[in-house]
Image 1 (cartoon, rainbow over the protein chains, first blue to last red):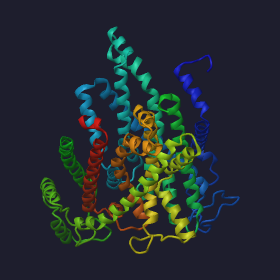
Image 2: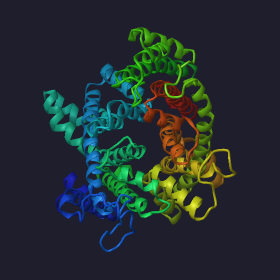
Image 3: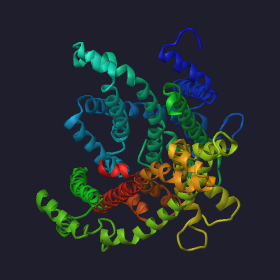
Image 4: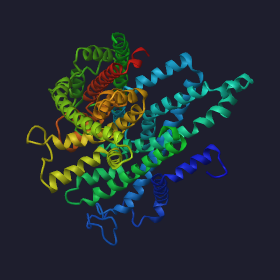
Amino acid sequence: MEASNSIWAESLYRLKQNKLAVISGFVLVFLIVLAVCAPLIAPHSYSYQNLELGAVAPNATYWLGTDTLGRDQLSRILYGARVSLLVGFVATAVALIIGVSWGIVAGFFGGRIDATMMRVVDVLYGLPFIIFIILLMVIFGRNIWLLFIAIGAVEWLTMARIVRGQVLTLRNQEFVLASQALGIGNISLFFRHILPNILGTIAVYATLTIPQVMLLEAFLSFLGLGVQPPMSSWGTLIRYGVESMEEFPWMLIFPGLIFTVTLFCLNFFGDGLRDALDPKSN
Amino acid sequence: MLNLILRRLLVAIPVLVIVASITFFLVRLAPGGPFDSEKVVSPQVLKNLNEVYNLNAPVSEQYFDYMVNALQGDFGPSFRYPGRSVSEMILTGLPVTLELAMYAVLFATILGLIAGITAAVKKNTFLDYFPMAIAMLGICMPTFLLGPLLLLLFGIELELLPVSGWDDLPGDKVLPAITLGAAYAAYIARLARGGMLETLNQDYIRTARAKGLSEFKVVMVHAVRGGLIPVIAFMGPAIAGLIGGSFVVETIFQIPGLGRFYVEAAFNRDYTMILGTTIFFSALIIFFNLLSDIAIALFNPQARSS
């Protein structure tokens, strides 16, 4: 171990030891850069239809082939990455805000407030949210912002439970009791002592929520309830791929591959982060 | 025990009523009436249609009527399939979906438990790494990708199994069950491994070994009881997930189950069908969560009192 041994430095050290997590991290950064720069690097237009061309197999001009409407697959996947990743991050942020606030309030105040708030979470856990999301998308139209909110509103429950458990444990630790004995107020107690100690957990579960959210978005898009044409997410690309997989398998294989790889990396990176921040859990 | 079941039931009923009410009003909020379509319908026909479907009454009265009927298992007529009631459609789709879910759960549990327990017992060997890597793949590969890929490989390229249908050809249930169960097999394997690893370190396991029990008996009798609690806790929510998965699997393999009816209803804006199935699915999920709570209480005495 190096000279610096703050908790974060140690965690970073442990994370670096985990090769799979480091590689996953780099792949993810690479994908994000590709998605952000899509308009600059996409070799063709994602929406230009060349009906005479139709679906052609991967070749020198169209690296990943074209779809049935003659649109370049590579460009569509790059633009799809923007939507899929954006949904992943924004909906996770929504889940994070709701879940963390809920968990903190419940854990911090404890007692009856806690019992009531957690009861609500228990009840919501038992509901068929997937059906509600489909219902919302059907009724209010396929709006991408609604999609963010709907998915975020579903995924906050686990976050609330975890944060609440952490806060509750911290609350009873001696250093917290000691600072209370010294007369510290609730607000500074929270920001000085509680929050820094749960940041790691929050980071881990945020990373692990992103793939869940992306799966949900792709699921909706696959059913035709997600992003609408000419925009595409990876879910919609897979949907079109499935429709014509018998004749043009590349339309399914490439979007499917990149989607799976991304989820793989997110999960490995999240697991690595968890092991690094909380060595006891392993 | 009885106390726990009663308490859970007492919570379940108001939850179900709330779900039904929210769904009812959400559907009423939907822009446009159910009979708005490209076809021009004369005002008189529209009026009669609304009459038949009780849409002219005040909303509060419609709500009240609907709830009373729903309690008796009558979810009203389908908007899109004249002459068929929602309850009738649910009843034809339900056995298919339940059968599919049963095979999927069976597949997932058997495969997941074997993989997870083996991985825990043979920790840090090939028998641990290999199944766990496959499990990660199972979690990352969504149903709507796995299904078509299996279909392409085994159905179209190798021509080993039928590509669609239900109860028509021998073996037509294999691919849907595997597709639906794969992700759950993966989760179960991971949970079983984690739970077993924790339990195998406990003192009572050491005692069992010290007594001279065979390793097989130690693992399969003593450790399993505690080690599989996470798996049992997962089963309730898993059923909820299975229902979501059945939407996709039934669509891909063209299985006439509840999931496909729901997706079709969503596309056709068949509001009574959406409403009925939503309430029905909620009841189903709440019921399975209750079952899994009871199972946990049976396995873990500590959970009974809390």
